[in-house]
Each structure stands twice: as structure tokens, then as C-alpha cells.
Length: 582
Image 1 (cartoon, rainbow, N blue to C red):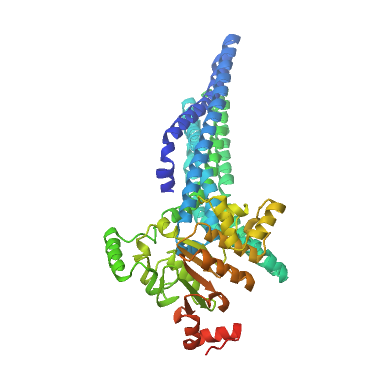
Image 2 (cartoon, rainbow, N blue to C red):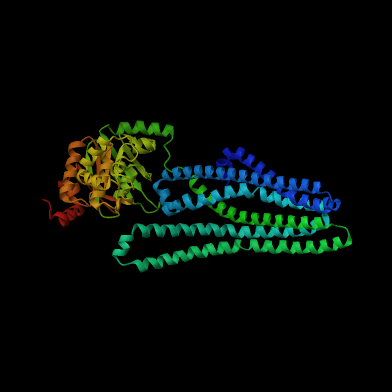
């Protein structure tokens, strides 16, 4: 919450101060009306002057109009500040999310990040707006009401003041219990969003396997958990309103009883009692507003803490220090000549920092060469590509590009060198051309050419004619092979220095796969290519083939060399092609 108040609201301090002043004036106008009413009843009416009655009635009307006008203006200003500040918070939170490392994204989880960008920012927005609208008005009405009642009749005011400490204790106790419950609620909402996200994304698989009832039971369990957490939080905070109502109404009963005795004794007047009851209603409403504000603040504090967790994350992919980076660059340039585009130098990496997922990997790929990577599921193929792009940092060893440690590159400089198709890549709800362009400065001719290289030109033209080239979310109106070809075109469009294709041709038939490889060889001969695949036919023509098994490098060489010297590769080749080598 400190970051929200001291950083994001700082530019709006002036506007908020003006809004508070206007709100203050509106509240004062509201407080004057009962006081004027008491004066008219006790002092003006007994005189019998209609002129004075109408005059003071006009004053009450002016006060009412001013109170309404000031409150409307202040509320509009408060809403504008809340929406503008929340817009910036969402922008910064989204930007930070975009630059989180893969490790940090996995630690927060994607559903949790979505929840923080939506529900949590909404709670903060409600808090900023409500504090401006009620944070000034309610306390002023509360304090002002007490002061006006004391000016009218100090004895009756003392009855009211006896209730205030009890109310304060109730609010503090309930708030302390409510805040942890709201944090727990937000965590359960994260799990809820995660399940819904997975089920909606996998709806076809669920239907195909007739697992609707199974998923409904899972949903029911987590839905009940969310409801239970929400009920516990709301039940705790729900104690506030009835408790305050009861205490204030008991105070009102005491005021009426004491007031009746005082009027009977001639020490007070009827107008003061009427005004006192009006002030009591104002004080009651102010206390109710403060109690509602406490609920909103409790939610917002929990949400702000979750937002701050993301915003305060340190960059775990920071650049090497200037001195270290320069020294590393010089040393690496000596060790690796310019032709060695990619060098993995004794690289070890672990996701959980306990058991290594990659162990002592070393290889070199020269500029323009193609490296094929093959291995069983979970052997570390995608992890190796992620380390090359520095989506994560190595634990030991170095990854070099062009003789420089990847940690010495600015992220944009490094990743602008790559064209990549990930194993589970995303197609957005947009045209085919915009899905290929992805906001880059690419002309239509370059995009058409890339689609041609990726063997996607024919069906792209058909989509243009029939559907205007629009694609559904996640490319639902494309086949698996069509999706992969659009994604490959996206990677090729900017003519990258390094091309990474992570199992990107698994849905292509052998003829299309062969044509794609021929296009890469003819038109991207200067591009260094990393081809991750499950099929021997996809990698057998590569300049080098890396065989991974349980994170270890068990083979490296050409297709023929591996058939002779790597038993695992030979077994894969035999099972897929029947080729047992020499």
C-alpha cells in the first residue's frame, strides 16, 4: 500500500487536495442545516416573523444546493483520480509481468498474475475512489456532528461520546481479523482462475474423453473453497454494521431519555432535541460509511500487497556489471572467433536449484549452420533454447553468442537477433498478417514472402477470400499444421540471425516438412538454425545433431556419426525409419 500512496498517487496530490477541500465545504454545508433548523424552531418561530422564517429557510436551501453541488464535483474528481491512477498501476503491473523471467512467472503462476491485473487492481481502484469520497466526508460529518451537538447541549453530547470508544474498539478488532481472511480469499481466487483457464482451454479434450462430470466435481470443490473463504471474510466484516447500529441506537435511546428529562426540567429546548436527533442520524450514517470503507480498505490492502510483490520483484536477469561485462566480452572474443555464433560452455541449469535439468552441456554452432536437437520428452531440449534466449540464466558455465556472454546483452538487443517458434506457441485473435507482423516494422511484401517460405501461402489466400484473413483466439479456425506454418512465418518474417524451431513441424506432413527445410536452406543460408524435433527426418540433414537424455549430452555429431557411435540415437532412428546404420 505504501507504493500506491507514495508513488502512484503522488502526481494527484494537488487534485486530491482540491477535491478534499470541496468535499470539506460540502460536509460543512450539511452540518449547518440541522443547526439552522434548531435555531429557527427555538428562536425564530417564537418571534412570529414570517420574513425571518423565509430568510432562514432560504439559507437552508442555499446550504442544501451547495452541499449537493460540492459533493457531485468532488465525487467526479475522485472518480477521475481513481481511474487515472489505476490505469497507470495496471500499465506498470502489466509491463513488469511482461519482463518477468520464466522462473518468476512460474513462481507467481499465470492465473495469479491475471488475478492481480484484474481483481486486485479493481480493489485498489475502489479504495482510492472510496477514500476520496468518504475518507473526508465521513470523518468530517462524524467529528463535526459531535462538535455541533456539544455546542447545542454538552450534557446530551456526553451520552453520545460514551459510545464512541466502544465503536472504535469494535472496528479495530474486526479489521485485524478480516485482513488475513481477504488475503486467503485472493489466494483461493487464484486457484479458481487457474482451473477455469485450464478447463476452457482444454474443453475439446474434456469432451472427447467424456470427463465433463470429473471436471465439474473439481470445479465444485474449488468453487466451494472460494465461497467458504469469501463467506468467512464477509461474515467477519459483517459484524461491523449491526454492532455499530446497535451501539448508536442505544446511544440515541439514551439521548432521547436524557433529553426528555432536560426539556421537562426546562434546561433544554425542543429544537435542540430535534437537531440533536438529526445530527445523530448524520453521525450514524458517517459511522456506517467508515465501516464500509474499512471493508474496502482491508480488501485493497491485501490486493496492494499482492500487486507490490510483482512490482518490487528484482530483475533476476540483470546485466553483468559494466566491468565484468567488458572483461567477459574481451575474454570471450579471444576464446571464440567470429564464426562461432553459438557456444555452450559447460552449462548446468536447475529449475529447483537442487537437481540439475541440464548437466555440463558444451557444444559450438558456427554461423549459418543448423543444429538439430533430439531427445525424449523432458530431456531438456526446450530448456536449452530458453537459456540461449536468456529467458533464464545458467547456474554454471556460459552461453555465448558471437563471442559475447548472453548476460552482457541488453534484453531487446539479444532477443532481436532471434526468430522463434515455441512448442506451445500462441496465435492471437487478429488477421493472419498481423499475427505474422506482431507489431514489427514489416511491410506486406515481407510478410507474404515469409508465408511463402513457411508453405502457408495457399491456405492464407483461401482464408483471405472466405473470412477476411481473421483468425480466432488461439487459431481455433486453423488446423494444427496451418497454425505451425503461420508461427514459422512469424519467426522468418524479420530474417533473424538465429532461428529456433522448437518442435514446430510436428503437425506437418513429411512433404511439407521437406519443402520447408529446403526453403530454409536456400533462402536462409546465413541464418544459424536450432531445430528441436522428435522426428529423425527433421534433423538428419542438420550440420550437427545434439542428443539429450535426462539433461545430459549423450551424443553430438552428424547423422552418420551418431548412427555409428550413439546407441540411443541409433535406436530412435531404427524405431522411426528402420535404418540401423553401418
